[in-house]
Each structure stands twice: as C-alpha cells, then as structure tokens.
Image (cartoon, rainbow, N blue to C red; front, side, top):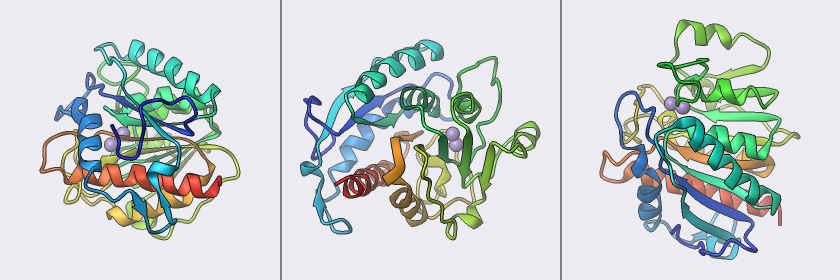
Length: 267
Ligand code: MN
Ligand code: MN
C-alpha cells in the first residue's frame, strides 16, 4: 500500500490503483512490476510535505491495490475504465500506477477531461502499432478521440508520420529544452499523465523504452505541481524493476507531489 493511504476508499478523495499491464511493451519488459515497485520505494519518502505543509496521511488517500491486467489490451482498457468510472462518480480523483502507458486511455475515458497533458519522451501518436489499436505507442492518439487538445511535454522521439501529426491544431509540443520555462495553466479540466521515460535515463533508467536527452526530475516535479490543481486524473506509467530503485522512488515522489498540490488547491 502507498504510505499514508488506507485500504478503504469509501470517503477517500484520491484513489490509487495499480495497473500492472505489460503486454504491448516492445523493448524492455518489466512494467508489470511498476505498481509494486513504486509503493515499495515510496516508503523512502517522508509523509510530511514541506512545500505544502501537509501530511499525506491526512489528505484522504485510498489505495485499492492492483487491477487484474490480462494480455488483451482492449479488455484491460475497458475493465480499468469501468473501475475508474466508479471512483470518479464517487468524486474520487483516480491516480493510476502503471503498467505500460496503454492504461492511461482508461484514465482519460473515465475522467473525460478537455486536455490530455502527457509528459513523455515519445509522441505516442501512432494510429496502430504492431497491429494493435491499444498500445503504449498509440496512447496520445487514442486520448485525442476523447479530448480537444493533447500537450506532449519533453517529446523527442517519434516516427515521421507521428511528427507530421503534431502539426495539427489539436497537438501542442513542448520540447525538453522548453520545458523548464513552460508555464501553462488551464481553466479546463486536464488529465495529467507521466510516462517516466520523459525524465533523462540517467535519473530514471528503469523503463521500457529509454530515450536520451530528457528532462531533469525537478522540471517534471514543478510542472506537476503547477498543473495538479486543474487535473481530474493522474498517472505515472512505464516504471520497471531494472534498477536499484531510483526510478520508482522518483515516480513515488511525483505521485506525492501531485496529491499534495492538488489537495492544497482544493482545500
Ligand atoms: Mn508513452
Ligand atoms: Mn515514452
């Protein structure tokens, strides 16, 4: 369980759900271990958050464990979406721990935001990937079927066709070099997704598709703090077990950042 959380989500404001899905991973597997790994290394962090002067245990965080994540991406997305929708109807903000990025599609569909903000090294704008409609490489494309705008922060990798897709009015790109000075706030509800490979692999090596020349961790942290107040859902995905724990510790810290800044803004 995530430290500071409780197992009964009944009157929780935030619900943490693990989605250990790892079926469309195309390079290094291990995202199935992400949720457990993030919870384990979250114990390295203090419950008290100095920045917002709050303790995570006082913020109404529930942790309902992991969903069953089989091999068929369409059924996993559908099942996860229905689970998340139940929590959204009970006015809980869903916080997904991946699993590969595919699970974010369920988060977007359950929360129905106007904007999908994806902090990611990759565009994930393929329409299909290796024959799959639902894949870690098609996430942003699928999200665009629900949202009006996708913002991809830290993007540096994609196919020619994906880069061409970014020229449409519904896609905004923030390059890694621009991320530090990017200040955006949205009045409209956003869904905030953190593909951990957006962070430079020197800091976050345990991920399925590492991409050099990435973000400094503190830049991602500050973007999350800024965007959390208008977010209706959040996830951290693509964390694997192939390191000494530094990637999961960072992921846990970003989850904590989201919860504390969201809670502070919503009293
Ligand atoms: Mn991704
Ligand atoms: Mn990625």
